[in-house]
Image (cartoon, rainbow, N blue to C red; front, top):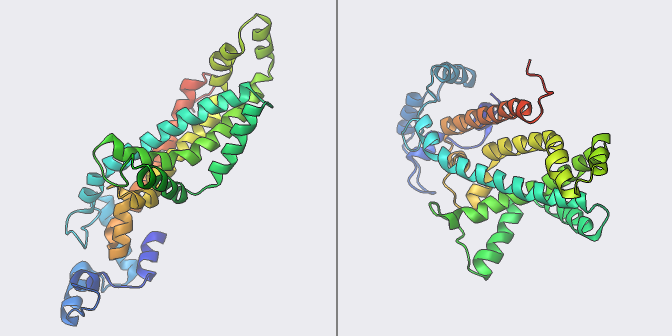
Length: 290
């Protein structure tokens, strides 16, 4: 509802945008009025919202003002690219964050731990768009190793996935380290040490699974945030996902597509967090599903 209201409070008219052929062209007012009637834009905003909601409950998200295709078709055509980017970035953040967090906990208060902790503070503080620009500057412009845009090959995926995963891997590193240090101080860990098990075996087989609940929560939130907030990175790298579609639709005043994006991204966020809650039971049998 808020997104719907903000769309109509923003300057510009979708009918004028659709009929204008250039920045200095003025469409025929009669044609603009006719198009506004066709789209229902001449009605009060609350009435438009109620009608949109009624259609939405029937599975109809409306029609794009720009492409004249169904909004659901536009979104689901672009969704696979966003899912590929989101899951790739989450997988990278998981591998990098947990492995470095594990090493940081095993070598706590040593110089390696200090380097990991300092690096995590730096990378967690950098916004994603800045990391993306730095990656483009280094790997695409300077060394010319990877493309700055495109879709379809592994080389196109590397830079945007890194831009999305670096900050989150730093946060996962800190969380994994903290949780492991708590678990490693418990009685059953001292018992395992007394039985002669190595530090790496204790950390990986006994401590890490018990430290993963909070890490899993953070990863679930991260994946949900990526699915709903990937627009900036997709725009920087010209990645053809739903985030870039949302930015393009905002610029065109294509309100039905923007509404569909908000609804889809919100649904994905809720779905991912529900899945994380269900996975708690798989990681820790003591968790009851009720």
